[in-house]
Length: 333
Image 1: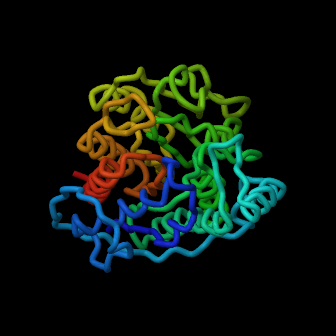
Image 2: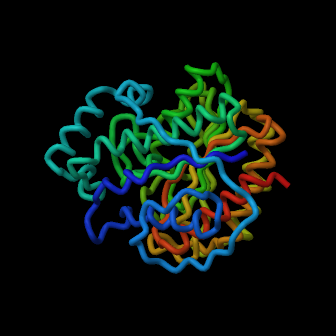
């Protein structure tokens, strides 16, 4: 069983009419999973018009209602001063990180709700309610560093999930694989010196894309040296390059580490149609990437995998790719 955790309230984080991380991203995902008949509840955005061309599937996801996170949850990674800064910035509609992370009055509450969706998905998997789960929520999280919100991200959602699983369930070894086209600098910053978390990021080469980090020589520090693996890919790479990197580097790293659970930062902005990068991954490529990660989870974690939405900015490509991701999560074959 695969859980689907989301809230239509995540559209209340209003980034303005021309920002790529816009509310329509969530609307497109909700339309896509319903067009594919992966879930049966009514579409919360019936007025949203988009043609996704998605065929119905023969599987169903378990819809799981999220609980909002708290400031205490955020403090698993972030100091209170960062949380207070985000809260106050949202009260005034300020822009974080020199202009690319806009806020509105609702943004702080919705950032905690987005984090809560990820924690809810992790709880469902950790308790055994489902084997795998996907949190479809925004704003995303993988660029947020412990002391800095940046790159459309307020809180480091997947890093907080990892700490939550360690504290609440005693998981000692957690692996995070990030296939967003942008380097997961925030997640890396949270765990660079921590050997209890393996962080693997596949991304477009930092010489050509934000945030400019994620070189192959970035392997962690101190006791965490060797548990950070960056795999920068040259612009123009597609399914072949991504799958080769996963087979040659990601899966062996997971095999060696033997995690208790696998977390995935699922960004779909390496798609050939995405406007913010230069990669050529297809809908099918994202399904094949996911199938390989599910197989690794089957081998090492009893199938336990939690996926959290990150990027993806072409609405049609995002909706279709999320459906293929979910199909692969539901089918370990």
